[in-house]
Image (cartoon, rainbow, N blue to C red; front, side, top):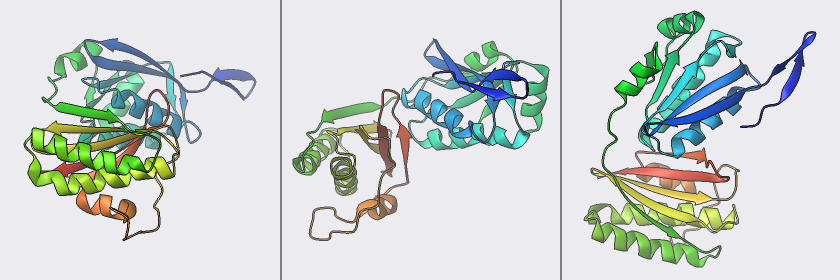
Length: 254
């Protein structure tokens, strides 16, 4: 992530930057700079991008190079942890490597985010990720993508023995794929991911714009927009893709 400079008082300090290394399958991220209202979204989206890569965990190291404007901004870590807990199911961990950050982690309300005082302890706590199967297809930048998506979903659900989810999965995939073609003007990539009895439908496109709610078109297959995606899903969301664009996903329960 690029580093920018900005003035503060008589000196110049680096704006927020994320430095990532991969250790035994985990993404270890060291933020530097100042977390405030202007950099909150940058940190949030940067950590989401790390999670979409599907490491075994996202471990954030907080040391003297990281400054938080107020304790309230630490909620960004809880926000990220909650958003990635359903999909891609990656745990977020915090490591306080300086005394002030250890104190902040001890008293902060961080929800599902695990907290540690050393990186070695965090790495030792990373559990083996649950087994999952993935099926993926590249679709054209064409309205034909909706038809191809329905065929792919039906065939995959049959092969993976989750035919009880096929109707909902077909409907959700159609909406997400056609949104990507109509509004993101992209050739979407459709992925089906099965973990236990939980099926995730994920569509990647080339636009950073969040998914739009189109007007319902009852005569078109699907045609009811994101409202029906929400009603059929346990949860759904949108993340930035690390290599550009975004992923819109929905989790269906079996």
